[in-house]
Amino acid sequence: MARRFLTAEDVRRANAAEIVVEEGTVVTPQALEAAEQAGVAIRSGAGAWKEPAPDRGPDAQTTRQRLPHLPEPHDNPTLESAAVVTAVGKNRPGVLAAITAKIAEQKGNVNDVSQKVVEGYFHMILTVELEPGASFDAFKTALECMSSPADFAVRVMNERIFRFMHRV
Image (cartoon, rainbow, N blue to C red; front, side, top):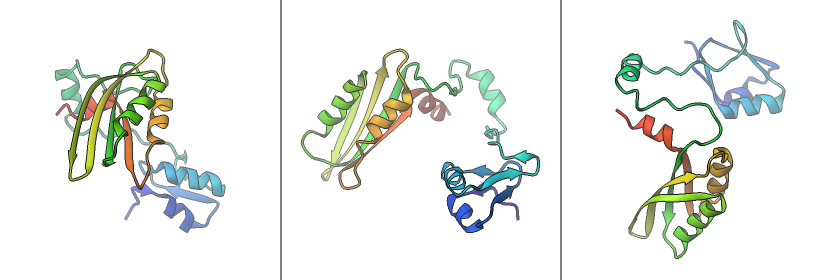
């Protein structure tokens, strides 16, 4: 049976200078990092491994024609409009203030906040607009670094990707 995914554990177990995968195999970012650290080359039958094109499914072309107002997310690293920030964790005084202060520090403007506290745990969703030319990656890193296993987790997603995922 052909392998469809290559993980970091697969790279560590291979204990080889080269791993040959089938065309279309998805190599996880952690596997790429593990291979680079170990000096392992990943290749397919056609040469060096390259990331396969995403499978958009049988209805992708029809959807693009029917919903042109919802463009596909692009690979541009700068954010053109907004981000969706989610935070989940144990409730304590100052959580919202800490997160919004970090957003302000990154030159973000909170457009909408939804927060709910249930039995001592909060769940918060914020839509944030960044100033033109701001780096989405820097924004995402700054906010996600606030996460603490004992306290709360923060995740950031490009708003265009969020809309694309939820346009069914």
